[in-house]
Length: 541
Image (cartoon, rainbow, N blue to C red; front, side, top):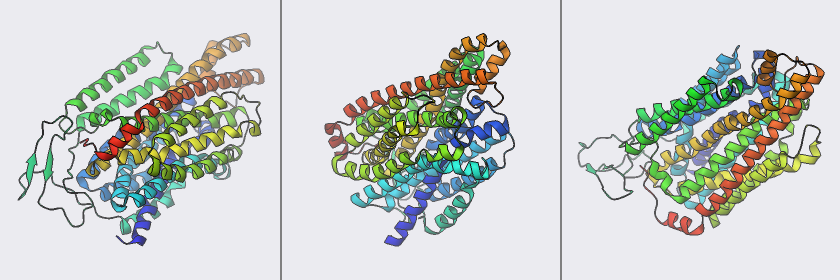
């Protein structure tokens, strides 16, 4: 493939991933306005974020399977169409329910386009050095989308309203679709049959070997799949169980602080989530062609890499959801000011992302990943030291550390995973990495939100009772949280103080999770394991 076309392919894939990652966080600065105009409390706003991330995470592996089966280019472009349509639907929404539904459509589109993105990237850029550079740029652009979202979202909300954070995707999606139709390579699919002339079906009883491979006599001249690549069957039972289990878990975590953790509805959904997710593990363990091959997690390098990606998004997404509510709802900042406050973090991601890719290509992924995760832990712990009276100059260092830590982790995680799996499994590996990153964000918003809401509710009980607020009104205030415009002065002050107290606890929980993960990653990605990984790719399908 000529160099110019390679650059256009890279631009298309980076642009779409930037848009998909941007949509995880660009909505955050619009949440206070959405809550006011669509009359939604903190729980409803959580679903605006979770509706996208949950569908994205739950369907990523299916997106990878569909790409393997029907062609990665076709599924990628289909996902791009759905994402763009969902963006337009979100911008036109007149109720919180319609907005959540449109966000779910966006998540479906992102789940279809993301797995094929990394797989096509790997096959277009075949040399080790150019592949490392391309993956580093692709990962850096993805991380940049997460950082730029709040920066551009704030001014857009203030100038054009909250719908503008969704309208921005429409022209970008249309342009990417037009370019993708021209430059993205056709990727031929392989029929899952054993009656092809000259084809041989194989089985192996060796531990860790693939259950079945198919060797056609020759590959299509236009395919980018390596010889021996095969098409995965659609694991419908696994997909249904994963979606139900994750959805039930998030619902229980979001509703727990609202209804009470002992409420029968919350307990019922929590129990259903545990049973369903346990069934998912059993089904995937026994399936001939699972959507998530559990052998993936027997490898130390793969486990350390994906765990790091999961926990980084757990802490960062969980934190970024509540920071706009603090800055705008408690501290009285405008959306523009709240967005521009994130510029130092964005700058650090731009600096760290290419640096981490170069370091990982030369020295391995261990130290960039461990250092990045540890820096994120320091940042969250540092942020918990400041209250609503702190000046920006006092805590701007936290944003710089957080951005540098995020930038250090994205590219090395991708490089570690793609360097470990067989080329034919790149699509599944890509989907698994991105699924767990997205799932980390889903769980982070839900868990840290539950910590914040529970602590806030407990902290409000005494002050609101002293102020003579009736029981029913206390529950409404606790659910609405920071940003409620109809609260009187003393009640407003009590709510703000409780919100900050809950946020501090949530930040410390996130910091502890990140610190523990940094220690685990240092062990799992130790040099011996990495050297072994580079010698012998693991067949995970």
